[in-house]
Length: 500
Image (tube, rainbow, N blue to C red):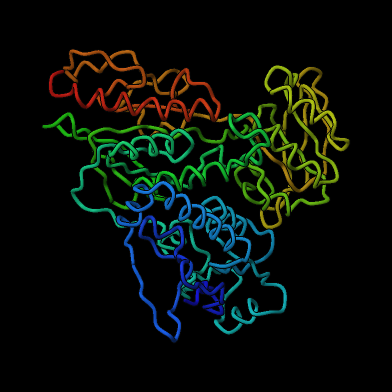
């Protein structure tokens, strides 16, 4: 069986040839989505046993030994496709905001791609000239099936890759999870492994804020550390293995309880779609906080970043950069970026010992090219919307003195605000917008029982992870809440009919 990969321009490229006793397959087959590889039987004929997604998952779960072989091969094959540059072809101006956005979207969702610089001679530029593509229509995305998209949105790119599954009208899920960060993925894994029908919805990608961490070194069981992207990828594959459905990138706009059946909850999604479930878990995490600096939104993705991935590191290699923030996420980004840049200016309001783990502080102190700006904040930025930022002005909060730094890259890790605006009119929140749990139900609910520890003011609606008031903002804590909420879902659903 000759195996080949799909490519956007040349369409097919050989990978390997399978013989007797070997298995074919690619990780997308676990969810029934379009695969990035194909195969043809050899000239001598063969006997093939084909599995659809449901039967493949049953095989993986039913036999631990066989399942381990299949899962390991699927994961390593996806890694191989990513390393080989298979999948989509992106053509655009190197370093442009739109191209970087697409790269980040595909990378965070573990979809392989290759980038061709539209300014250089080659097949990318030849395709642009042949199709008469205007500069304003870049970047191009050539999907594995050959479809060409002009400056696509993340949703358009996901549709071309088959990432967004068709929702079954009228299907009632046991659990609908809003958010595919560590907390939401943990819920999906534990709930689906217990036989519950689970759907996970996220407006961006898997991993949440943790997915942007270059290396998490204090997560239990990974003594050498693990990147947030790798951790999220493993959790995603686990959830799919147990049959959870993941819908990306689709935003949730509101939650609507049915008037005639308190056990039925409806999530209204972007694009006029909806999902109905017996319980809802809010794991929507937090949004990156934007400092109060004039015109800052203009340069987001064009010099200003809220994460530090290999894509950003490549863009600022050998340059002078600034990073604002003193938490663990900032520390991980500093350790990742500093060896790749000329100088990294670290801008903080207070001592690192107050906000950052000691192992990160020790590592930062050992970096020779990190300059610490204590008690400072970014007061202004300058630049051109077409080319990005050119400088940032720092202001000392104690004496008011200012310092202007000439740079083209500014990384912001100054905390996050709860991503709860879509649900704040339905459930109780604290003064900062974090969702309150375990207190009391709304008076209109007519429930006699008290809410469970992770249950909101609306029955059968739970909140976990960073979006929950009082939660510990750590990956391990989010995963723990994702596991704990499943037992509370079972309890709430069993009590619902006797609690009105």
